[in-house]
Length: 189
Image 1 (cartoon, rainbow, N blue to C red):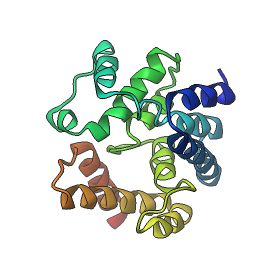
Image 2: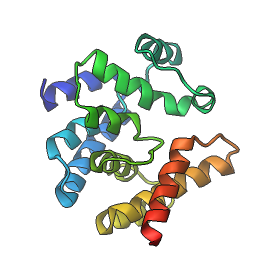
Image 3: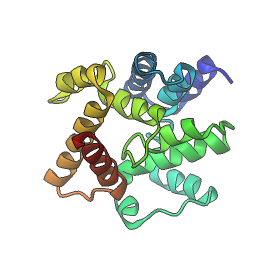
């Protein structure tokens, strides 16, 4: 399948607002891939597909994960917001037949991040934060950092996520903490 076919698939699976977001993330991922030397085609595909199961009912997401042998840890079980990344990656592999591990991981970790992220994973993580329609407090800072230094943008995005979750008394997945610590330690040397 090509990009336009993937775009039509997601258009049928989500509302207009989420579809616009997915298109914007894909566009942003292409720009960031060009700037930082990631595979542009993979960035475009991962960007358009990153939220493919975001509007899928929770029971169906659980079934997708179960059918694909995925066992959620305690934090994931209690954080439905993380499910779409996990179920989306499994769906893209099992239903759409995408086997490229970098694309699958970019979808899988676009919400939490993780230690040892690939360049493509970082591009999708940042593109999700900086898509054209995003308007949260701090988005302009994030956009500026995204085009100045990818590692700096990752640190800012992870700190934003961790802080937001902590303020709302929500669990923070170890992947986010490990990604944050890795970037902070690496960039303090």
